[in-house]
Length: 351
Image (cartoon, rainbow, N blue to C red):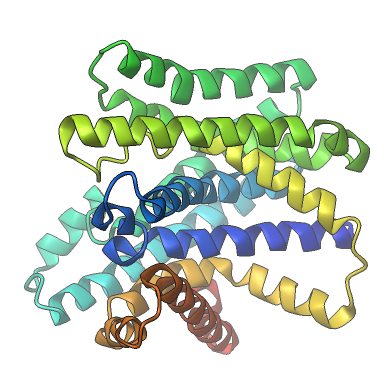
């Protein structure tokens, strides 16, 4: 793999994991806008951050597509090993989070309860990504054949369909007075399994610096308009239903945001001459993002996290600034734990 390509992919991973952590800050950050008066500047800014951060999962899936869909003649055994590893990771971390829930007094231990909730995906909300990734890996041989045989027009057609069915149609349905339903969630999950990996492969293999430069301003104009539309519709929905936590419009155009961020990072990174030290740090942190994702919620559910955040706010720090600082601390600690685990026998496959 070209070294600059490898660096920009790891930068994308780091950006994505930062926003994944923010997405899990709850009332302290992600839902902070619900504690501000609608119409005030903090309300608009905090809501925008909550909408913006939703690009993280599509971006991770696009990176997976870029890395895995281009491989030819890969043995079936290799993908079976990937699937087996994710299953083991899912079982182990689900059990760890289950034990933490028992320690926090949220439930009592029962093997039956653990197995039922493991199958249902109800042990820890953030682990839903592992179920999504498993579906992607199971579909990988089919998606690989699909992605490698699509041309520019067909890739554009796929993106238009995803934007239409995830965003444009549901938004118009709501404006016209229709009740939105759960089908949007199924469409969103399908987009992450099929479209996002294919788009990642497409951007990785078929778009160069010059081509990105031509379209990037247009992509960002479309992206900002889409984010503004999400914000307006979220506010309308909240006022109409008095339900601000429905996330009805939070994912509508996340794929557009992911594409814009991908193009921007690739364009900028290819103009930079990375020093050896910076490059090694970026590669190390980027390759640790899976472990950071698995560990960070454990830290955010501790009393130490809550006390530190409370202390920052008690000394007059802005609530959003405080939670962003805490996200950085959680990232660093999770990275350290991941690095330690990766050096221990038998633990490397779990991060």
